Length: 404
Ligand code: ADP
Ligand code: MG
Image (cartoon, rainbow, N blue to C red; front, side, top):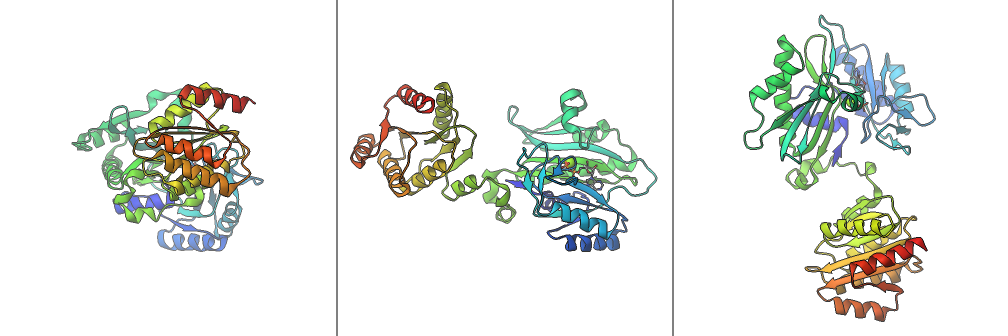
């Protein structure tokens, strides 16, 4: 589950990670109000208005049809109101959103991080994520923070440092000091950075995040270290440990078909191809997708109906697949171990009859528990489905269907 910047920053504050203060709002008037409040409270002359969407690259992104960037500095209340007006209700296209962009429903009015002080300011990069290959969390960091970090990673990968954290010992004090040292900070900034990294790591572990990125990590002119931006992803498998975090889910940012599939406990991921597939078991689903590709098609989705599938969930899955106009064929590949084939067959039949008028060819491979009953149900139902016993036969039928 992805969080918005303003939500992630609230969580960080609970772990004593210093963040750039801000107020999330959803109207231009409230944005102007927020600016005034920040000015009274912190004395900053300027404020920064930031579109809240689940995608990065906002600083360089633009609102469709306008000369408005997703992150912009406002010099007074009127300015802030205009920027917020341009952002709210607009569609922001960034390098991460794809050409369709994302609708901006909220903006964060944030304290300007540039204010007068004795020392130079600097933008760093720091993130924590799970290194699956090593089975350890890794802290990645660089002196080259800011909006061009992707290019830094691509052109000068040696400028990105990595620090792995052993799961049993956790982050060690010497590691936090090493990070501060490698980033080249000294004096108070050094102490503040060590504390920042330590608290940030605690936050990452505490909320069961699987990704936490601070870019820029900012050193202010008075040597404070603050998170100016924050992207956070919470491990969905750990959400049950954090009922309070569940409320932070913003379903308007998620794929609507995936949200609906979630309601039926279907493990569904939307893809771009032309062959819909319904499978039980993630491994079989992956193998089925490979098989679809080998036969000349492209999977339109990943769908694992799981072991507890019943006629209702199968019907729901079937409807979701059929909603995609690109789908030219559907392959149902079930190996009945825990799930019974006849239940799946009944779900397909129910869906078929209640939706009616289905023109795409359906290829069914049902094997295992109650496969014979399933076959009989389908034959009696009068559905025009094509049956396959072997995976290779199913593949051949899929190939014919998509190349027809
Ligand atoms: P994104 O990563 O989506 O582009 P950021 O929050 O990193 O969005 O903002 C982009 C850039 O805007 C930052 O790298 C920083 O230079 C500037 N910026 C963002 N917030 C502030 C702020 N509160 N004060 C000053 N500059 C800011
Ligand atoms: Mg950023």
